[in-house]
Each structure stands twice: as C-alpha cells, then as structure tokens.
Amino acid sequence: MGLFNWLFGDKDKPSKQAEPTEYKGFLIYPEPKSEGGQFRISGRICKEIDGEVQTHSFIRSDLLPSEAGAAELMLKKSHLFIDQMGERMFS
Image (cartoon, rainbow, N blue to C red):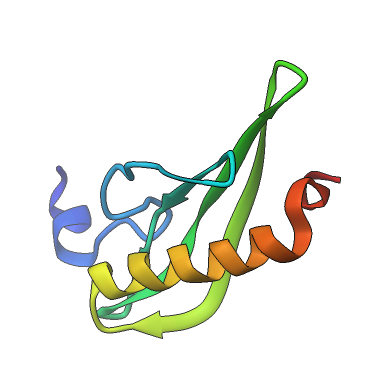
C-alpha cells in the first residue's frame, strides 16, 4: 500500500471484500465505501437469469459512522428493493 493511499484511502474501492447474503434467489454484496470518516451505503445485487449473471449496483446517499452499520442498512434496503422490483431491476 502506498503512502498516499495509507494516508488518504482509496475512495473508489470498497473497504473490504464483501461476502454475499442470499435473499429470495438474489445475492446481496454489501460494500460500504469510506467517505470523510463515515461509510456510504453501497453494494451489488446479483442474480443468475437464463445462465447469465445480472448485476445491479446499489448506492445510496446515507452516510453512517460505522462500516458494520452501513452494511446492515444496505441489506435492509436491498431486501425492500428486491421486494418492490424483483427481476425488473435488471431491465
């Protein structure tokens, strides 16, 4: 890791590799992004449809003080989004 990345962080990368959570056949990858000492809710929702993996990037304006809190809220918001949109999110 370079000195500048250590000092200022890499804002374009998630803070660590996400483990997926399955919900109604979708895989949810919470990937909170560090921003100014807080964490933005973001991640991916994926599902295999007709042999092809479809991915929806999920980013919200919410900022939370902890990475774990941002990951937990991302899961809750993803569940609601999946319930409302289902596979239409990939259209």
